[in-house]
Length: 177
Image (tube, rainbow, N blue to C red; front, side, top):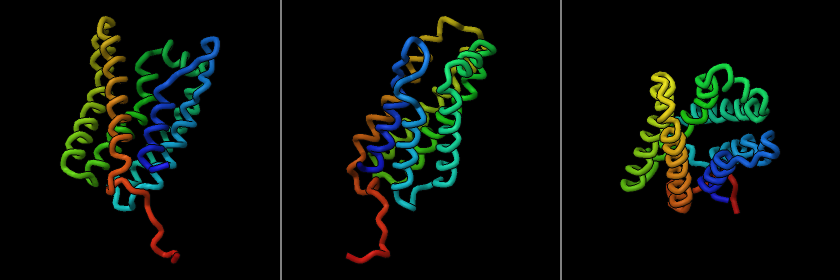
């Protein structure tokens, strides 16, 4: 599997939620994050912000393991919705930084789309501050749909650009054939 395909499939698993009896997700987000990290590891060494992406990806993986347990996620949301938002921030920051980093490798048209996706991800990450802070429950649906639409855009872009030369897997130049 190509690196961007692996990352996109990881995001698909993260985006989908199939709960059994309202409890555990049978498509656990940690599996998605493992795919994301595997794809990230295959990308070119020239990828900007690689150490930050690795750290953010690992943090998002850890948070996804913690939030996979329904009792904890529900407890955070019951205590204060902003706690659940804060627990998900590493994931959103990872997506924004990844899009921005890939834009640094990409051709002009792809770079514009990836920068747009990065900006929209930042907006989606900050929108809960406005909606929850202003106690505007009427905007909760817009916030959720907007966030899902941004993630869908990122997934589509990753699949679309998976075959581009700048997204090719890292090749070990030290081995001889």
